[in-house]
Image (cartoon, rainbow, N blue to C red; front, side, top):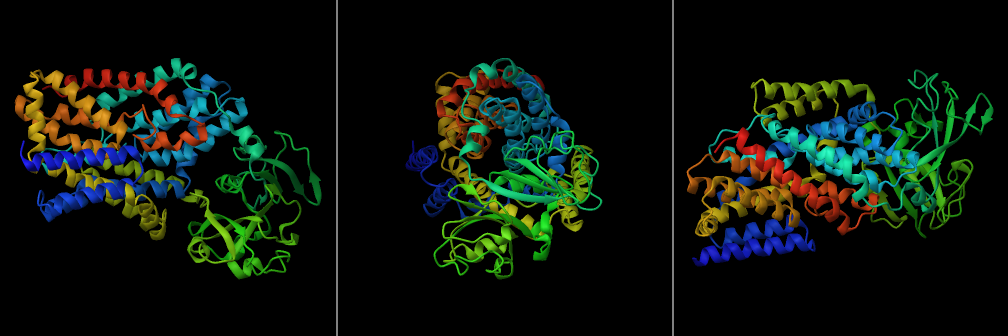
Length: 590
């Protein structure tokens, strides 16, 4: 062992410890490691920065724009609503949950899909009087399994494909991985359906959480030409909202307080809702509803410039002890107050007549610039944006869906690579205004830490090769008499899977990739089975909330503990490993 090998292995060990402890942001850890191996001369500046120009990394970044367009046009919500349907039982909910989640995750970023599906899953839990914890972890697992079915289903696949092309090897096509991913999805789904309800915990659901949540009063209107005209409350999707409930309808001077599910909606109806702060965000996503009183339209903001923001009035707010109308709130802040909460309870009555007090929490519909403008001003003690609260523009949903289909078709027919097809799709979505430049830029900026982790991890993978550390590890494996290609494949899969559970999936794939190539070279066999094993092992993360971002996203809403992931994640990981290791050599022989 040379000093360079020892030093590089110590750096890798330090990275593993730092990422597993989660005390330092992953992008800071990876960038720090990149700088160290650069300044110590293990890699050159060109090698250190090569990862940021990798096709896989660029494809991940461009697909964030595609996902933003599908979200902003409401295409994702429309597809999910049609596929999810109205299940009546817990088993039916899980069955209807897995298929659409996996389908969407096969072509979109998993994080986007899970973030969009969580409210729908919570709605099911409320309607079925079932704990949301019985559904949210299967949601994450279905997204993970669906992502393994295509090359663009997960950033890990794209990152590894970028490494493959960097080595001069032929890249993968969009459906090459389906031969293993689809059987894995089917078998994993059957396991979740048969054993998930027994292994998953039953924790506090949405009903209990709403009892302790801040209440808001939100009023919406059915405008002229709304698709909700003549639909019943049940058909309009207003019967079982996730974050609130419909309390009354005002029509032609009459007030209807006992509104049943079969009551038909009419143009001009004014609907009053009560619920948590997310109620307004949920209502904005229903095609055919607009804010009442025209307050939002008076802000002169385009759809994609609006967002929901929660603020707490501070002692230096100039309108303290004045009504909203007297304080000229909308004129002063270019923000419409949707609801006011005081001491955790909503204030009833018309918003404009409420007297504002220090400590009042306001739910605002305003422009994106409001957050930066008032975050550090003394008018408010807290300025908190509600994530992903921009209302969708449903009119362009079919166009955005068609462009996504065109992107897939261009790659399947071999006309363009995945990166080229993604660039063309993103360009078309921007040209047709399915997503604005600002929204696209913001979406990529939000995910910038992920892109930095991927780019910097390439440098660490190169350091393992350049220092000789990767070769040293491979030699050690063969000194342990591992000469069977199948046993070597198992070992590569297990190492990658363990790394994924401890650190990020992308970093694990990049670190193990040179080992996979080294093992294939030593055995004199095709490297493709080992490369695919790295892809599946890095993506199939079920045992901890740390290995995959979607696992972490459902942890809070589902009330999960670390041990819950082990209880169902260990058998899921063993099952995924057995299926992958069995099928990979059959599809890609040694």
